Image (cartoon, rainbow, N blue to C red):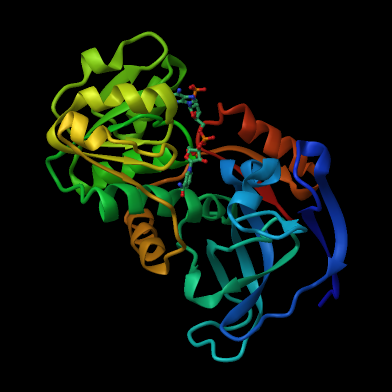
Length: 308
Ligand SMILES: NC(=O)c1ccc[n+]([C@@H]2O[C@H](COP(=O)([O-])OP(=O)(O)OC[C@H]3O[C@@H](n4cnc5c(N)ncnc54)[C@H](OP(=O)(O)O)[C@@H]3O)[C@@H](O)[C@H]2O)c1
């Protein structure tokens, strides 16, 4: 096994210039951790947000090793870990350090990968999948027959949320730009709204649950689509008195790693009900291009880095 590895780190906050690909020691797994040889790592908006300064707000210390989700082969098993052996391929969220040739991961947050996905596809699921799951099922308690509106249905999170909600038996209204209509309908969306040309609050009515991943003005206006007593869950906005004003419930969801959620998602994948969409695969050496693509805000599905 190598003792040195390449890793993407930042030593200061800023734009892509602060991202460095460095050669450092392969980490050692502590108790309850796994050392994983990373095969692929999903890129998420949080990665460039951390690079831009959100790391400070999140209480992270510089230097920060970038990357929050991975697929890889177990190299070493830390003390006290049960259920995992070297050579097995796992996927899941990590606190930091997925954009590297090796990473340590909490064993409790890792799950064996779905049998019917490539490593690239599986690497796209943990963070976006857990985000969608926790928002629509754990927070909003979406059930079969309810009407769900998703404000951004074509991105990493929304494209999975559409499929999870359809698998549950909900009615899905998907908001996207027109170029993504065919894509989100193929994911299972029942109704489509083009946010670039339609006043969505005049089209959608009596919605039970809104899942917002856009925020800003969209978040403010989309309350009008909810029925009285409906539920708004957002992963971007900070609610401020809207619940009382509109007679609805509002919650902000912060994604946490969950092997329980990941196992439920894996089951849907293996049942053929969910398939991630990959916009672009790039080598680790092109980390800056990957972050810039994510930051541009127009990816359909996910961007994934491959390590080998
Ligand atoms: N709180 C948490 O724990 C948490 C966890 C995960 C994600 N998030 C946040 O959730 C947001 C979405 O994440 P993501 O990974 O899904 O992002 P993403 O993959 O980067 O989203 C890209 C997609 O957004 C669409 N889009 C851009 N502007 C839009 C608008 N105004 N209305 C509707 N769709 C629009 C784009 O399509 P077009 O170009 O065709 O419009 C593109 O397909 C990010 O801000 C992320 O940081 C928060």
